[in-house]
Image (tube, rainbow, N blue to C red):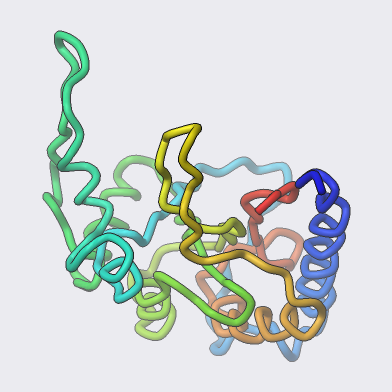
Length: 220
């Protein structure tokens, strides 16, 4: 069966999830910020610069098991090699060095650098696999600590994870599969993220939380 045959079902599932999210956003008692501070409200006609935020720069048990003890995205950065004259690889990070996102001071400094560069918010990549979250520590701590005091939203990276072989004769190895569990899972997903949606820093347009989806045609 062609993967494309699943597209309508996947798209319908994502539409149900988004409808659930926005329907609940109309319930002021549910999504009202936890304190009386003014929430982040942006106008639809007022473009903003938002930086995608990859939380891969700290070790997790799953990556230890799949890639080796201590693996982070820095592992791949450090392995890069120049491919032609003048090709600057590997690129050495500047201001913060090879940082660890588990360190709160690092996250504060990132927000400061973003402000100075004209960035107006972070969009954190979010990983949810039918009730299981991965790479969630950084964002959990951002929400629970209230720091950094910098606008944010979420984007669900709704794709399966594979160990790529880059060999057409050797199939990629599935690490964790992205599935769509129906209304119960969508409700659990929403409730899991509710503390973030209620946060005064969460970016809203017309009173609704901004929530991205990586691929509405995801064929995984």
